Length: 287
Image 1 (cartoon, rainbow, N blue to C red):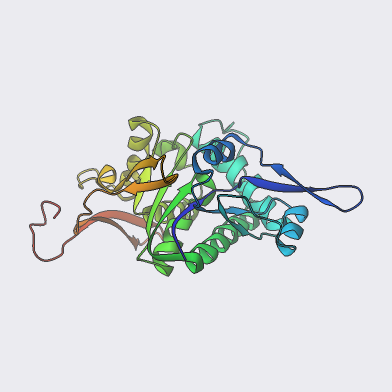
Image 2: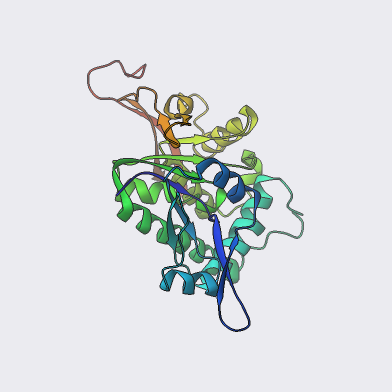
């Protein structure tokens, strides 16, 4: 069992197949994986990532997917599901949505093929949720990276409510009007997935405001209290002597806001921010 699990699409190690069939390890591409590798190297942290192709899957089958100083946790995904989740939904839809780069008169097109890709994106998140839920220890910290895992928070909250999950987005978050370009059911599922995390982090306050504004627009909750996201975000300290990355969590409030959805007469999901209470405090404040 692991007390800290980092989740990302790419891991620190991938494989390529030589013409003779030999598997050769190579450092994973991408700025996120390489940056995380520098931070986590030698810490013993469990790092869950997705296989990039047939060579990676064969390396997992042969027991080659390991890195000194890290506990690698590969999640095996078939090529078709990976292309749907990564190429169609994550990079061609969500990335463009969050960066406001859609050519709206022409793109995106939410046709039958895109709907099949959304099913693949859901399966991709589900595969990661199953692996993390099985490996995580009681009350473990799960640090999830980027828009590839927008649905993972709700899946982990339902499977393992004891986990403390944090999602950090390494891109902007779409403004409410831009997120509204997505189909109603897709937008509702995405927001519900993100609301499943214990905390969400962003690079700047502007993108945090966009994130909260999307919930307010979906449920017209402009007068509702806002989630105290910063109160749930840990400070990370690196111990040079022990080479371990340790989270320092603030005192977790026993009461707080939660997002609840209810179907309206038009078949849409109306979101509202409701405050839960432990029974021993005023509903106007957190414990």
